[in-house]
Image (cartoon, rainbow, N blue to C red; front, side, top):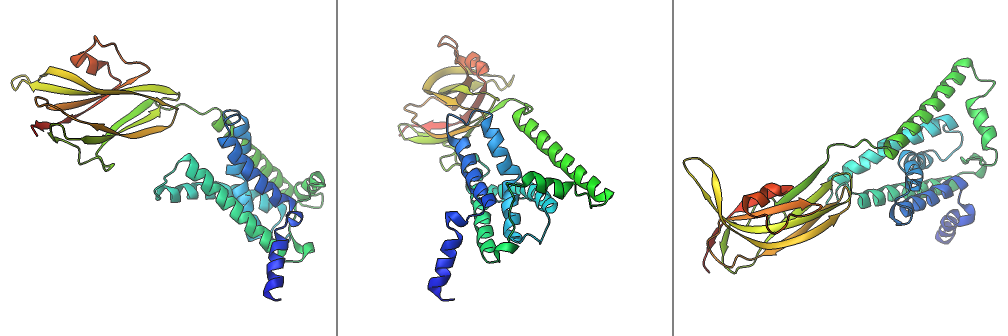
Length: 326
């Protein structure tokens, strides 16, 4: 076969009219899953769970099995169904593990993109491999006679009692796993509620904090907030300059003066993280501490100051500094 005919054969194999119905369903379901995750109208409804759940538990493994076994006699229907679920459960965590070692990490966008690419790639390979074998030898899902094929596969009268019993047990196990998974996703158990609050140096590391400061010089830290409150939350971040004095005898400390540097509000959805650079300047000497206060829902009034304000915060962090004249 010359290159022109080979190229035409490949294009013909991927034409819409030659796309097998089961692989067309894989393509459409993958697109629909991404749509229900990102379209605002539906991504907050139960439709997201109904459509996205098979994309996690079935279609990645099914497309992989189709790519590995394009023929209809290589494995039977029961094995194909069971392996589709089993391989999906294996593939999705592996994709997450790989993402964990990349700069993108295990987040929604990289996970959705990676899972969609894997599923579509395997379906494309499956469609290509099916096109390479005779039509009568290709695997196909008999959608029109699906109920008849289902009964013949799982309740074949000619099969032995042991085979029929194993088929029934397999169906019960698959149905039970699907119901349990759907319940866990639809009614998740709430864990401990908390908020992450942290500061990093200008390079994004827990080091190289600006502690030796000259008056008027621009400084910078990175402030991070992680919302794990199981609800959307409004946070208020305040930055204060303090002159704090310690009593060597008692070990207690007292605030001599306290001046506000900045404040901002951060509205953060549940299970989301905010991380932004926070520039600041110290314009005069006489301070030895920078206090970062985090309030949730609302901040106290201006009349609450000093140690009382720090105690009223939801989370607090501080940096010891030395300020020298420029």
